[in-house]
Image 1 (cartoon, rainbow, N blue to C red):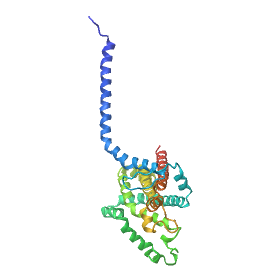
Image 2: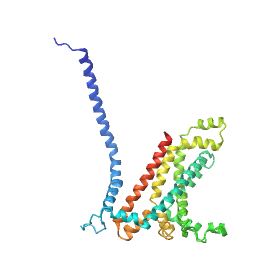
Image 3: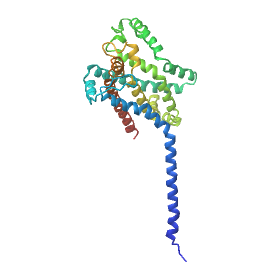
Image 4: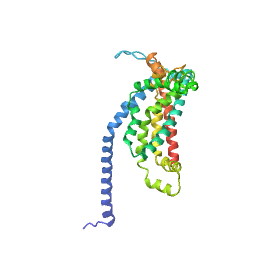
Length: 314
């Protein structure tokens, strides 16, 4: 008669449970990949492939041809990048977009958080006020540009109100004021979207925290700074990232407001230079190199913002 030791009796069920757990994890992994597949395909088609193709274009003397035509596009290595980095117009466009981001991102975060906090406390006409702030974001840029030109042209309403204090040359034809004026316009247009993000985040800040602050004798400003701002920090990181990425792709506003980057290139952006070089002048390889440099700059700024946000959370 064979005898079964207690150790063998204990090991067998344990091995069976381990095998079943591995099969369960494998099934979960396959299911997870199936659910993730549509998004992964979307990312590959919309983001990864165009970025990889842009890198390929930037390393070649690339030009567009008719469909089905095969031509030689010689490899040029880093020549397009060197040309972009030494081109005064390209360097000016990157400087312009940094000025734009400094103004736009700062105003977007501050104004959207303050206005969202105020709207969150409104009892009457709350829906009307929220829609009012969101309406410019939904309106086509071409229609809003007409209003902005009416306000900030040389004979516009703003200059008439300012009288002798109005700048000369006027806002959008002034080299020092053209990009700040565009930054103000973009901030005003997109403010409603970011207000909604902050309004959603404010719903997760417990009222008991404000009650505790009031019990401790905190003023409204102290409650805002010590309760509201830390409570919506994750939303602030998101707003910073979205505003930075959107602002780095600035194109429509300078194209429409200043006639394509004027005056004297004071409002050109890298994307506008890409359009001019790649489409108008037929240099897509050079334009792709500018685009890759813009991606690197944007990722660097976004990484820094995310890292600073995590540092404060830790």
